[in-house]
Length: 140
Image (cartoon, rainbow, N blue to C red; front, side, top):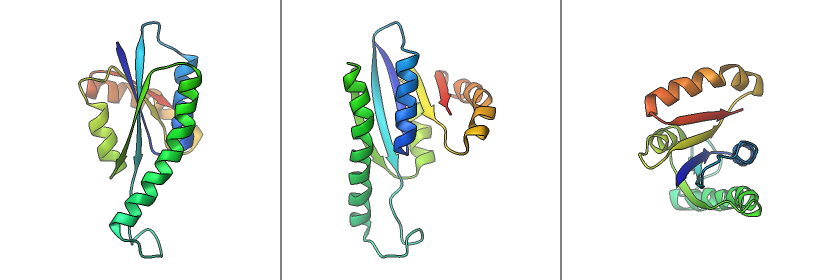
């Protein structure tokens, strides 16, 4: 069975990637793994004090809400999926996730202005696909 990874760090990106998957559905059976990635709030980024435990609780709660929207799209389309929340540095988590050997394809939502993502998406796809030896699609 084909395994498709969708790592995302904002709800809109996750929804865009799933809608792209629904538009370009693979012909063979597949399963989707949703990976919601969030960086915890730290005292340098926020003007209020939060303990590390409270910050992690807040971001996990937000991620559960994000996953709800994306999971709903997959469930209504009757697509098998699994969900996971990871807290930490987004770049590191996504980089290691797209290199996993059990993943066949990656739909990676782009961050940044739409015009920039559209302009460089194909170049980034080729570069990442060569580096990871799997199909990676950047979703602008």
